[in-house]
Image (cartoon, rainbow, N blue to C red):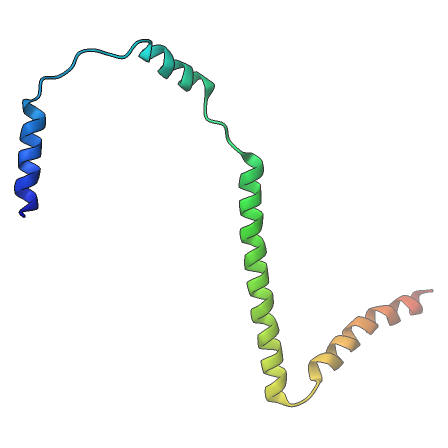
Length: 100
């Protein structure tokens, strides 16, 4: 079946049908009432969607950085990161004791 031929036949049939001038009862009032009511925006839902997207992104970043950290430590064969982290954490605690 030729779709273009079918489309031309359907358009010709639609053009040959007389236009109906009737409008349903109180059509204008229903449309104006719907426009006046306005669209209800669900702000809580919008925040929920945005926060879930952010949470998924954060989890993906956490998994990738954890895998990278384990992989980089595995290649080095030592615990340099843990030693550097411990030194950095306890360096601030040592400086507080010096002040007093």
